[in-house]
Image (cartoon, rainbow, N blue to C red; front, side, top):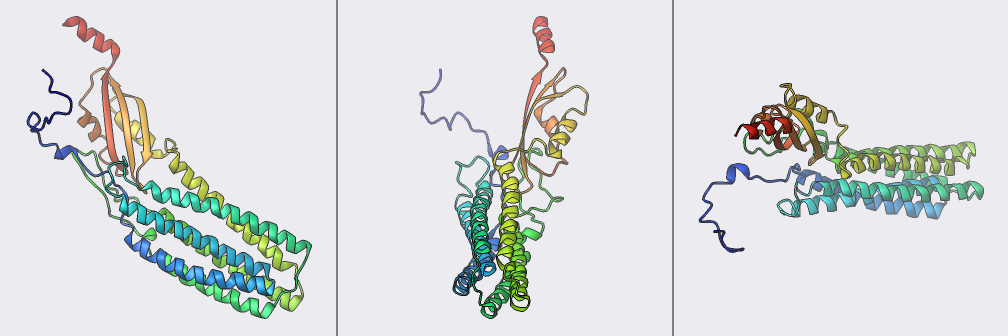
Length: 337
């Protein structure tokens, strides 16, 4: 007789379930990244305000473009800081099947969208300045542009020394080779890597702004200032598109073209009997994947034996195997009973 619904069945099930239970948070420790990004946000916001104010006051479109570029950088890093905080807060929240790591990816995707909007705005303003030139205070603009370059280099140094450029030894193991720690792939902090590349783009824009201002001051090429604004807008747009591609692939779980999928299939079918009828692979960390495979075989083995074939694939953090006997074999077995 079945116990009433909602009844406490702890006395009926005294088995120890701990070997099959585990955390599903596969994200790396981002505390160092979070501290560095907070510093970078503070520094960049201060410099952004100075460059935008100076560009508006002295009529330098190149300086304005550089200032807004730094503003998009500050916004992107601000989103990264928020992502770190939310991921840390929700790290053990059971509502997330594989942890809140994708909050980081969603933050990077949001930053990329914002960058695209700002790139469009800078391009429009630069075209207007080309159509209707304005007088530029070159000396003052040069001072601010050089200061902006120095700030960008300082921020790049801060971010380059961060965990995005080191191997990460964070991981989880659980029962019978279901989890495999990745010692061969460097775990990349997507937010920090994007921020670092963005700072480099900021530095390049600052260099272009300095070149444009010097050309205008000494050669009289005033048209070069708004032209450099267009170049800066193009750089932001390219960075935005690249990040959108990278993050959208992860958010949409478009991972079946990853070489790991072919390796999983090849190893599971290595005995010539088992066939992979269904395979799902999705990312649950920087370089960590979850895998579900449905197998059909004439002489099926246990799920643990099939799982053992994937033991050396370190990128697999979570493996689920479903085993089925071929229908013809199953029918023959039933007939013999």
